[in-house]
Image 1 (cartoon, rainbow, N blue to C red):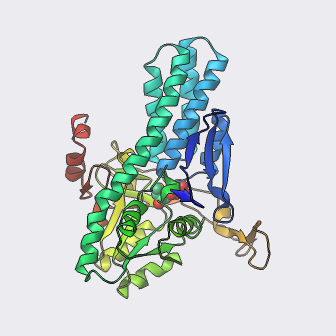
Image 2: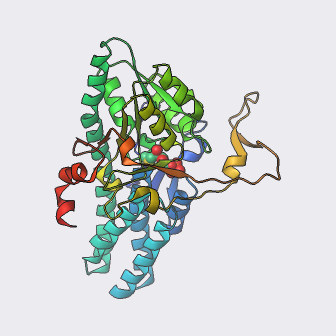
Image 3: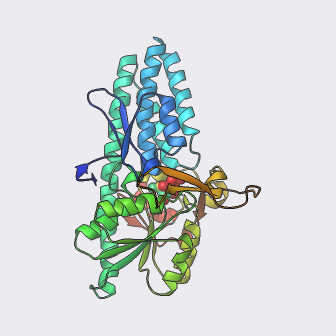
Length: 379
Ligand code: MRU
């Protein structure tokens, strides 16, 4: 996607320095900055402390972190089994940074598998570099296909409401290109519709506590010229009752092979409200976000608990100040306790359809495995 007219991905390798470069999401939308990662532990910090975030982006940065890990292993040992042992340890370190995110483990395991099948140590590093590129390219292409496959759903709803009035789409959190390598998951059909001339308007949930909607989704949509309005998270139900939402599309951090969807906290409430108002609730995801082992999302997906400070404090720029320096404020009594579950699980019965790179399917085991038959065979 373009930033100030220049094409960017969220993660790439600098061809001159061989360093891993990322878009640093912490300062957006106030400042656009890129950062170099030079070690596995820096890649881990970037994922854990949310310099990067979002399913596909976390996976791609982890894949690049494993390239840094391979280089570190090569500098430490000349022995293959020591290399593999150390490489695995570094992979586990990366996986422990965000427990709910599926793409993280998926990318690390793919690197371990691919590099494990090569015996020469230098070749393991070469393979790690190739796999990092492959994962990034694949993520971008899969997200592009999600747009292509989701577009007919939006066209149909637009035509049903007369083919004139803007299509009002509600989204939660950021499942845009910043959350992937390019295009995004939830945003990809939105960009495709906008680019094809359908008038779209997006209701952007601000997404407390970290406001990824207000900060990131709103910024991205603005960069692409997509009309949008930021709303407080609690406004969605009311807007749906008033007939002001035609469909909901969200991303997901992990979806079970039975169709239960883990996503940013608050997604479940949007799905309940959409269900009550007869509004389609779509979830867009690349296949790398499916959890092929877990049957019961509500009972089995580990939900990351983040710092209570994200609930009790808020940061932004001082509207009166002339610079874009961020400040933090406390919202309530210092003595009050807070809890901060970062994700929730929307049961499959509330999901109208899943939009994937292979096509659109219902959120149930049979439909998902029909789209990914190789996973049925592997069971
Ligand atoms: O806590 P975050 O920002 O890493 O949250 C993850 C997400 O970006 C969302 O849950 C998103 O909607 C799905 S991932 C594309």
